[in-house]
Amino acid sequence: MRPIISFVAVGCLLLGVDQVSAGTAARLQPTPMEAFAQLPATHVAWSKEVTRLDSSEAHAVVTVIILEDAAQPPDRMRGIRIDLGNQQAQDQVYLGEETLQAYKAALDEISHFREVAERQFSGHGTHYYGARIFWYGD
Image (tube, rainbow, N blue to C red; front, side, top):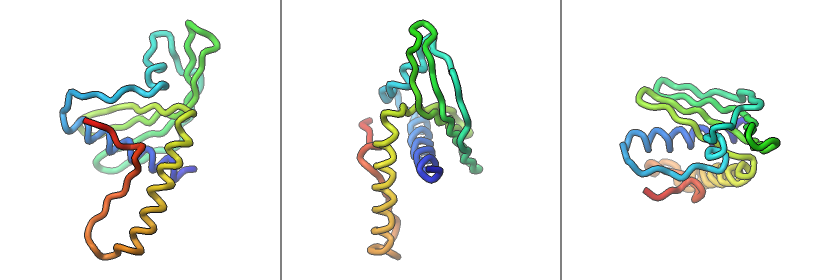
């Protein structure tokens, strides 16, 4: 599970840093959990830091979280929050538990393709790996 969280965090970190550095006014639509987290009466009912990824250029902190809306008890959402940061910007990404299986499958797909590509294309330049779930329109 730890490698999966690491891949999600790094993917989100790269996505977030790239979007900030591009200076684009276009915004991605919030995930359901992110929209819930932004409601005025929503608070963190429980959280636990799972892992940190730090480098000289950026960092990510992955936290398991339960959000609760005090105005609509027992309205709750569970998932993960990924806090991203670099020298220029900071951001948070929320992934609800209903989406985690889809992200796990996408990361498994990337991992599998990477192994296949390394065997077939070893020594033939730079390769980029991805999954459709992580694509977004500008």
